[in-house]
Image 1 (cartoon, one colour):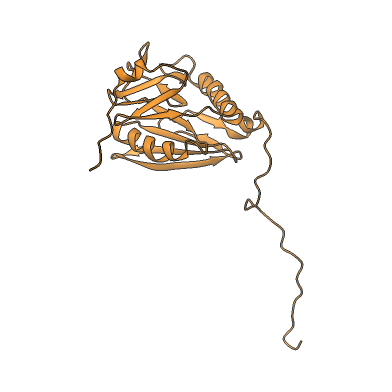
Image 2 (spheres, helix red, strand yellow):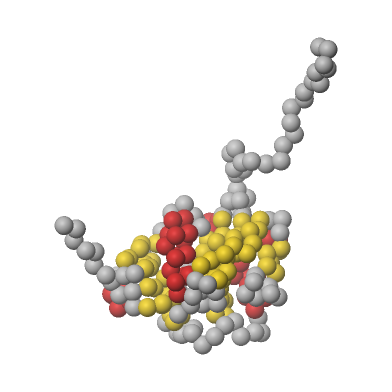
Length: 204
């Protein structure tokens, strides 16, 4: 007989010592790994752009680490959140932000694309961006009838648009040019030139 896993709460999380960042999903704790240089560079550039775009309006742009508390057993720290209402408190954001952004890495891919995607949909986060580090790409998801629908997929050649914020536009070429250089992706499918070929006639 399997022993049920303990179900932790926000109060438990507050008591844990050390420098490890923790998230709770349905009471299960997840230890978050340290980000790399590209992750932090993308995070910083996106924050600066969004901060400028929302300046003077009702929305606030918040960087991780900052708790989003959906319930006593669901507490996460998105890389970036945008909050436009009255849910932003001094210690945590209560309930769903208007926009959540997660920057994917090998260590968080399953966590961000499955566990947190399901949590954000269940808790009513209206818009969710999934950012791939290399090559730089942003997938924009919009919540419709309890499930996420992809509204756009953008790379460095695009101007990113948001369904939740129609006036928001981000030049990803400009953002990509500010990032540290990375080695080319081995074997990536790209535009190519076919090899020379000879035309065979019917009588040859």
